[in-house]
Image (cartoon, rainbow, N blue to C red; front, side, top):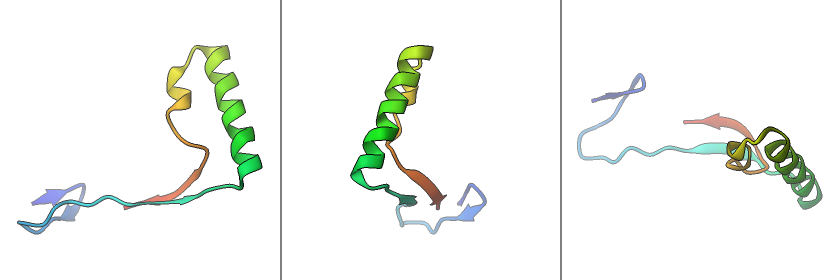
Length: 59
């Protein structure tokens, strides 16, 4: 079976992984405050969905 250009073997579950950088606590709080302000200013509740991290790769 092909999934997103990859081959998945029968009988094995599909796994997904994400490699992220997680900033130190002070920076995480600053990022979340910016995301909250953006959400409020632009009525964008989806701005709060993601955490305060940087995604390097997904596989």
